[in-house]
Image 1 (cartoon, one colour):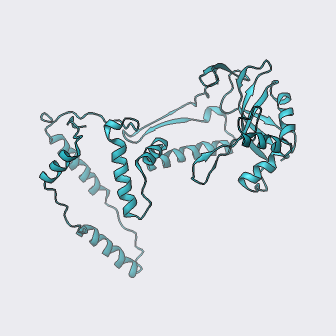
Image 2: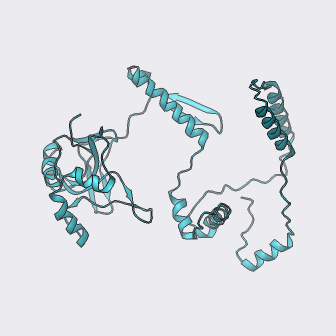
Image 3: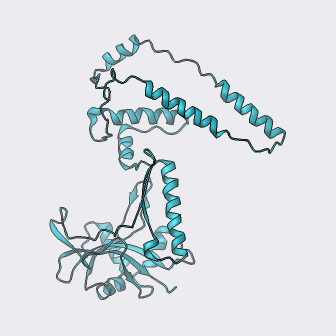
Length: 318
C-alpha cells in the first residue's frame, strides 16, 4: 500500500528487523478503563438502579472537535496509497503468509490447534466477509418485510433496500424480479444445457407429490411430473460432513456408476425408500417435516442435457 518494494530475502529481513531496535512495552491496563470498571462494580454492590444520564451534547462537541482537527491536517505532503486487494492465489503478495502467521499466533494464544499454510489458504478461500452491524441491519429489514406478509399487504407495499453503513447510505426500491435461468454451455459436459421449463427462477421448484416412494418409483414418476425429463443422477440437497469435517455429497443414485461404491449403492438404494436413505444419513425426521429437497442431473425427452429447478419431494400429506 505504501509502494515499498517487498523484502524477499529472509536474512535481509532479519537484519532490518534487528536494526529497527523494536521494543515491545510492558502491558499496562488503562487507568480510564479501570476507573470505569470500579465505578460499575461499586454501583452494582450498592444495587443502584438509577439510570445513567447520557450527555449527547458532549458527544456532539467531541465529534465537531474531531472534524475540525481533520480539516486542519495538511494533505499536500501525503502520498496516495496503493489499494491492496486480497488475492489468495498469488503467492508473491504474501497475503496468505500474513493470514497464516496472524491466525496461528491467535491459535497459539488460545490453545487452538495450529494450521498449516495450505489449510489457511483453503479456509481463506471459503470465507464470506460480513460486518456484524450490517448483518443485524439487514436482518431487521427482512423482518419488516415479513410483517407485511403476515399483514397480507399488496405487492406494491414490499420494498428492497440497498445499505452502505460506510457512507451512511440507505435506498429503498421496488423489488427486482429474480433472474430467469438461461441456456448455457457447460464446459464439463461440453454441451449446451437448456432450462426446463424455459426461464425458471430460483423461486421455482419441481414438486413431486406421490407419497412415500422408493428410488425406482421416484425415477419412474419424475418424467410424468416434469415435462418428460429423466434423471441421470440424484442427490440430497442437504450436505453432510465427513470425518475431516469436509463437505461431501454422496449420490443417491447414478445411471452410470463409475466405481464399486456407486455400483453397490445403486443396486442397494433402488429398492429402498428415499425417506429411509435420508434418515440413515441425516437422522430421524422432525414430526412436522413432510418433504425432502433434492438435486439432480437431468436429460430432456430427446436426451439432451437440461437444468431443472430444485426438486421438492413431498413424502407425506400435510
